[in-house]
Length: 340
Image 1 (cartoon, rainbow, N blue to C red):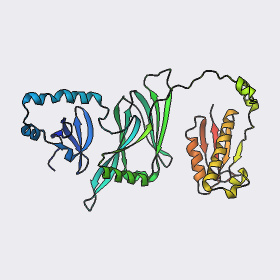
Image 2 (cartoon, rainbow, N blue to C red; image 1 turned 120 degrees about the vertical axis):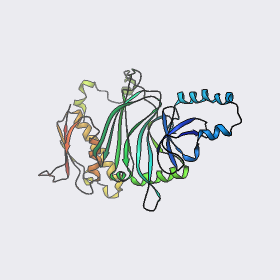
Image 3 (tube, helix red, strand yellow; image 1 turned 90 degrees about the vertical axis):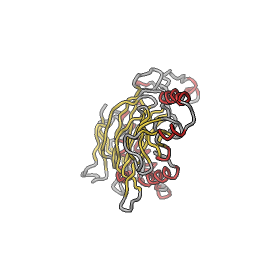
Image 4 (spheres, helix red, strand yellow; image 1 turned 90 degrees about the horizontal axis):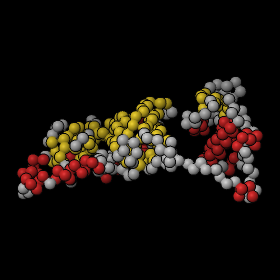
């Protein structure tokens, strides 16, 4: 390879000069231009002295490039990752050679990309098959990138789940207090993305977490007179519990308990009905301030149990939950304990 780490290079498409700081594979290098690092293909760079000695321009004309470089540095909107407006999760594949001397992905450099004007604080968690593997709390500047960590390629076989909770560095009364985002991807989808990046000669691929920060909800009191005239019952908030449907301490989600026509339902429709029933009685338990709730989901394939457990991990009212042997339900029930 004609380049080494530390070599000065020039970008052929823009005329910017920088240094090589790392090798990604035989076709790509990581370069640094005025403090901003990003990957490029080797055929997009050259040694700067070749350009200087081959140009017919005078020294005075060469100096005119300098203000252009400074302007590019200040923008920083397309510094490292080509993404759209919003906050993105970006994956940069890092290649190595196998025993046949073919390029294979060894791991991914995972970064958070902020293409907004907001200075954000974030809490980040990575879970594999529901178990926490990595956690980080930090901040990301406007129009900036933040390197999170590396993930081996084989880890995508363990159902990775990327979750984020964002808050504004400087609170704004007119804007929402926080933003939550979650991203899941399967191993098959990762391999498809690797092939797309190779085909399109792209350095990385990214997924949007959110496009813009939400405004604060309007808390003005609703005029309920029209609803009342239309026949709807209007209750005082202080008396809402007395008008709620009764809660249950034990909810059985076996499909034959929920509908008489369950044999005509597809597996997807059955699961959807079971999850909606779970959400209904979960909300009733919270509104009635129940200390505990038992959800009977059965054993089966474990799909319904896993969906319920994933939902419970995101609910703030849940103190803890456990799926253990019960003298009445065996291993087919989850006990939920609340905190208020």
